[in-house]
Length: 393
Image (cartoon, rainbow, N blue to C red; front, side, top):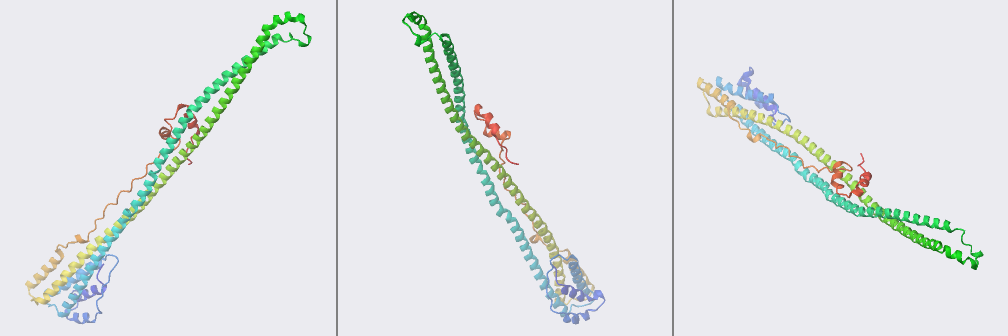
């Protein structure tokens, strides 16, 4: 932000005495110049401001060496002051725009935060659902455990009844072989009554043992049926619990993947916002420093030109006293306390990113087992751990 090159050239011409000309030439030079136009530069031109200040100072110095300020020079100084005031207004307007730009970039943090927090909260809502599935799985396994115990006890009874049945059957076989060949009904004679009487006890034992075997067989068959039914009931419940475990572990993996992805999105989004804000901050503060330097420079030039106007209005004499006053005026213009606080920019610190979602435990690590399987009955725990499926890589 600097005055146009025409203004700078004009001031240099107006200080023609410094460059070997006479103020007598100035009216014609100024009259020949086209109307002054204000130009705005995108970047601070420190050298241009320095030349502008030097030109105005040298122009003012010519008046201490016996030269009165002519009306043309005074008019040109007046118009240049007006242009400087426009430049100062533009500097201040640009400052306001820069402040707004910085606030707009900062606002992106504020605008992004609710959406990111909603995503994180959405991940957190998966935790209660997972806890429900974990509780359902535990409840199912608790129902499975007594069925396993009942089946195991039934199988022991089945084994016992099998052994008893086989023992009774062996006893029947032994009794059968002990009387085999003693009975020949087709050859029965009345004189054999004595034979019948002598072997009646053995025959009775055989018949009684046969009944015992039949009962043992029925008991064994009934126990087998009961154990098979217990096994079927246990298998149905075990399959149900297996599906519950699969749902739990699948959802736990989904929870973990979603949490990781959401957290990475939060970090990436916030990092991009921080990088943009940092760059904007550097640009805005750098430009603000340039504007402050420009403001100081053109304010000094304005002061010097105002001294020229004052000298013209006062019609100061060309004696040593006048020279001292001119020098003092130049010094005062350069040493004046110019407040640039209204052009300073102090950026706010970038806000902290939203809290990330808690990263859940994953199947089948130690923490996941402790969280979801630690309360399972001992009868089912080994099978559950064997069935556990880690998350896919």
